[in-house]
Image (cartoon, rainbow, N blue to C red):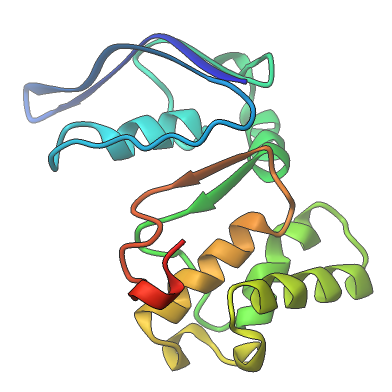
Length: 178
């Protein structure tokens, strides 16, 4: 389960405070699929960054699988992100000098999965998103939709209990949309 309690985020700069989130409380249970919708600037990406332990809230609590993440140090947050959360970023965040296969392998490598197993699993993920023939290609050799599918494969590669997507299908055509 993922839960937030009274979650707030205020950005300060230039003498101005900007409230990105104000007192947000949610519960998301295992197996649930939810979409957070709203206009640009309404805090959707901020909420995902907080839930994904990429940013810290100004106030409030966040629990992932019963772990209070606002109390974790940076090493604990990194481990949590790698084991429990798959990210599909709006800008993909693929490593340009890595092949599609190597980009998908990266989280597995960080977890210490053996070379043979991670290559096998990464290839299976690329096959699942229809890119098995592009495994050698670097991101600059892929279309925007193909890059997005590599990002999806990478997010799924460690089989995380939580997948966070910031416009995860925005660059996919109708055939490849999830």
